[in-house]
Image 1 (cartoon, rainbow, N blue to C red):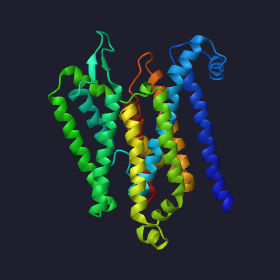
Image 2: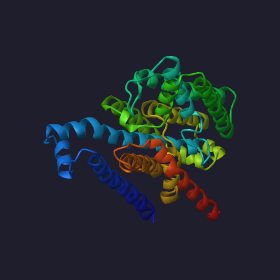
Image 3: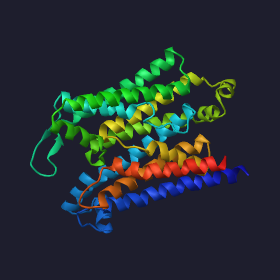
Image 4: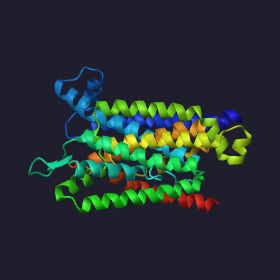
Length: 346
């Protein structure tokens, strides 16, 4: 009976991994450069032409890997947040991390002049100092997280109070962003808005390696704590009776999840709903066991972001749509459907 219980979960995880491979090949092959699947495979194996090598290795492959890694990170962060806060609506944006990062980006673009015009064409608005924007977004995102965690530590906030504090900080950072934009020049506002759209095309190999390191470390940490997360699902009192230090587990999980979000958002912009929908889908398919839910959520997030980015590049090609708009457009109805099904079952 136990083997049958675990077999289904392993099959789902295997299918998700296979789906990522298929979606990756399609995503690498999709684009304005006319390359067939054989040329793509040859380029990946190192036997491609000069043109195919540039297109694959410098443009498409970093973007695809960024989608896989960031999607996995945001989704697994949402999975842990939902467990730690005991709130199915928790996600990387629950604590205001995304809005704090957006505020930081606006500070860099508008206050420190990291946005400008470089041509008279359709791509006139650009970020002329992306590293300053990234650093500022990351610093403010972690500052917002630090405020929540300090309040929770020294004021003994409950999980519900942490969510409410996150909502309050999110509103505060949104107000700050509006005020900064109100006094900015039109070009600076355009650059700031452009940054918030979310764009995986910003990812270079440096960003991919940093993301891979952060997400990989975080995944190992979460898997190491999987039994504690299972105990938390049974309630705080039950977890404490099993020897789980609930406060430390919660603080550690929230900090690592926020770190993933801060890094992803600072590199790629605002990407919504991945951390909310991915874990919810997997919970309904394989259940609450975090031994399987954590890897399944990571893989589901990769699939969702990779497919969304491919659609963003191909729906109205050669125009590339903001991937954040695509994830929100498809994520919101899907999440409403999942909520409706959940309440119907109750």
